[in-house]
Length: 523
Image: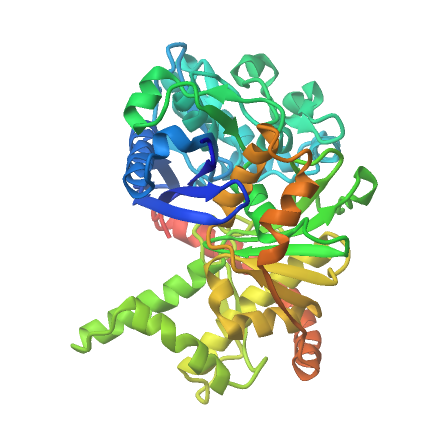
């Protein structure tokens, strides 16, 4: 009996394969760590073949966990990390390692596009701002800096597209990434106008066909079936990009209300549901993303902070290093478990933190590759609890910044990502957004969102609305309402937060010029 759907979620650091039954219950999970390299000058690359082999490893692990999985899989769906550029030649072989969303080397190219006369028109078509992590600027950068690889390339893929090709032998991408990179969100097709503004008209042939996984399926090839220990011919669905699948699995589309979704992971994705084209609100700054949802006529508008839990990782690394130097051993898990307690003891809004810890700067709701993190208002009375709370509040204030750039604050926000496990952060975000906050008990929302697309594609559900009724709504948790005193505190401090990042931009620029002048190209 074909009673299982496997969702693959290929992240930057971890690849997961999850088995779900047809009603959405998670049965088993298998994961493998992936590897990537940081390169001098802001580069971040990942080996394509290694990513494929590690994906196969997760599927083989899953086969060992689920009895008779090979004969029970009704469909496989694959999603993965967004943006980036994965080039292959005419034989389907990689011509170079893939550029990741973390790669900042195309920043100057992105700035040139942003400042060009055609950028506003490009933004009106794609609904998406330009930044260094996207395929358009990265292709331009590769053309100039790795012409051998660029000239050898037949297709330019994203991570999930590469895995779909290896699973099926089919070259394709999906409407979410295809449209926000190179297309028109109204038609869900590529746009020649956009390609012209990006300076890529002559390289249109690099772009693969766009397919919608809710309607189109491939079949597991013989070689992939052998590598993954699954059945040849099993339907394979190319899902939308991971952030769309995570939002879908987390509950963005789970109610009829004014809904938002924040995915607080390494990056912070803040998503506003647009139930029609008329609901899309394009800002004057030409920033953010507009992504198609796997539902006709429905879109997700996003503003994405480059760094979210990366700020917490920095704090944990700092504390762990200090303790190690003193001969005190504390595991990362022990340190992490202490954070909520520290935050609870600290006064709210006593210190401002700008959470721009990434070497790539910031991309939402403003774009500044020079942006860097920092505290404002630090004094001798502040201790580790105050610093920790300020970092949590910085993540929440950044989310408010993002939602306001897309219009107004949503009435309800579903929260996903590792940081959603922190009750203190949930309370702070609820108050900062002046919204009720809800989490899902779904452990693997990205893989679940991909599997939901497969469930619709194979006809198990007639529509995504039917699927959500069974896969999402029963797993939504309590609504956390905002505390009135905290709301007042964050309403008061937010203008200073926003003013600070505007005022600091010339300082960040001067610091970047100083670093470059000293011959230090890596922060």
